[in-house]
Image (cartoon, rainbow, N blue to C red; front, side):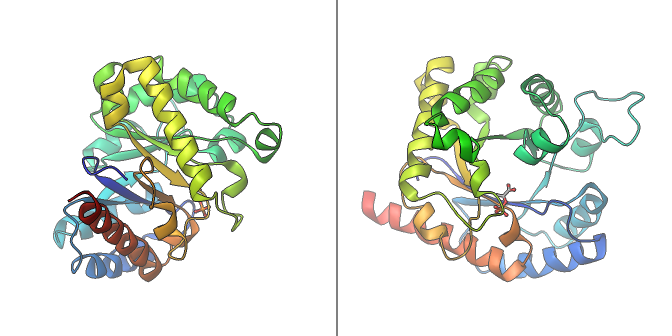
Length: 269
Ligand code: PEP
């Protein structure tokens, strides 16, 4: 991890927790976070839509060090889109980060690179920050197509963003074979992918943007492997699914991130 990029540990709750369970989770998490030095580590929670308002009330009421996140949004600001949620509505609730192009949505909801482009624009238009998910399938990895897949997904996304937007973007490298499988990428794989992502950003938007874009790793990250995954130069945080559902476990992941920042500080001083 880089000394000047703020680490982000993001919890993607997926379709878990009623709003009452979400309130309990975020209270316990907030209590655990309060004793940590979070000057260089940011924590975000991405509940289902039905829980965002409840989580926001607890975070604001108790002044918890948690940024509010969403798991997706529609690409239009308003209109006849039954069942959808507008980015305007999320921004109004104080949402800061919106996961965009998660592989589950690409696979199950037909989200194409074109739809992801439109969503990225919608998130920025509403002054929020996308957490853009990119990653190869197991079959693509076996055929040596990881970089090709990352270039395609990232190139398509970057094509619709300006340099300022790209500089503030969060990209999550999420190899599909690692999501929810218990099989995480090695530090070497994650660092190689993160460094490649940075080189694609440099090619599209210049070295300064590549130096400031934050690259997370996601895919079976846990409190047991977080220290290792955060041990390199290019991975700036973690997108955590399953292990973010338990507040104590998620807090331990954040603790590992705080320790990694400290180690980095003492190594560079
Ligand atoms: C995810 O879906 O973004 C994810 C990383 O899930 P898990 O941590 O459960 O693999």
